[in-house]
Image (tube, rainbow, N blue to C red; front, side, top):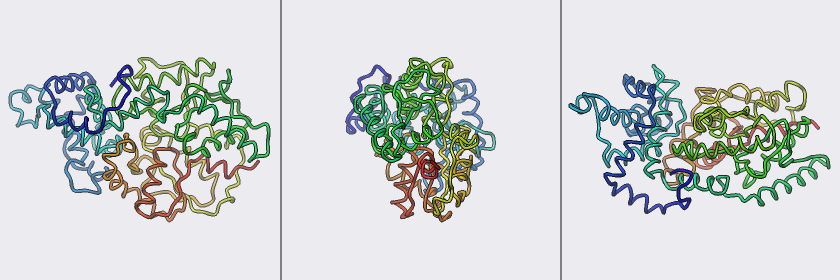
Length: 448
């Protein structure tokens, strides 16, 4: 569904009915959109799988069940089989010889279940593939085809639509956002006993525009206050926008390039209006990837702004002595979760470790970690798709086992989607851990 489509989400029952009664016109639309979404390099990857099976151990879904549909190679073949049927000579004349498959109703229904419901596009299969097949990009291409035909699970589509119509995925009004920022500013002044503390809105010529996951003002105000406290202590000249503050982009997950471009362009528009050349992206894995790596492609050109993670900024503050931390303030053991889109697919690998090592005395790594860390299961739009919640929590057992083995009391996670999933996993698997963002941990350790 594009940015100009009807923003009202279809009832869940209507989605099931649409899948059960797919028309030839709908199937043709999926097929056209699928081939339009593929680039030359994608075609090479679709034909490259050697079926070695190494990807099975890399996927958190495949590790917790015995269903073939969870195997990355199977999901890849679901996509490649349609490509072979339409684009290869043998696929057209002898489809069974090359594993080619018609894009019929059964295939589309299996695409929805496997590519939306059994994949977070985390990329761990890609980095462990012997030939580096870019499975996340191919999965998103197939999701794009489904999106073009209105076949995105309605809970995920509703999140995209809400962002398009209200400006953020939580549906927070401008007045509510401004009122929340002013309230948090008063709270922070009182907490620090410092009337000079500010949470500036719409200040031109600031060093950077700070953007957040809207779950912060809605449910996790301490995260937003923590970032403001850090910026204040560092003497930073920063600003928020009263119009565009949401760094999340669920068009990335739904596969809708038009929606994704609209959402990404809003932050650029606010940065230009406020005459700042830098957008600092708060603690959100997919929001970072969507803006910094994918946004220029969706928008059709590289914007005249620089994107940076707040973790890069905080690292610089620590290095340059603009903030001073006392790691002895907490005696608890901490471990670090690596958000897939921030670390494995985003390149922000050592910054969270530098920050955590400076902020606490007992930091224990998960095994494996960094680019090899397992997905928590909350990405790919899974948290919004309630129909797959049971499967999502089951796949999260891999992450729960990682956390338990560290003996940590606190899990640091620089991503709010991951925070939500990790909090659910703590309850589901009785881990007894708390989950905090890195800015919160830094604010707790900061010497004023």
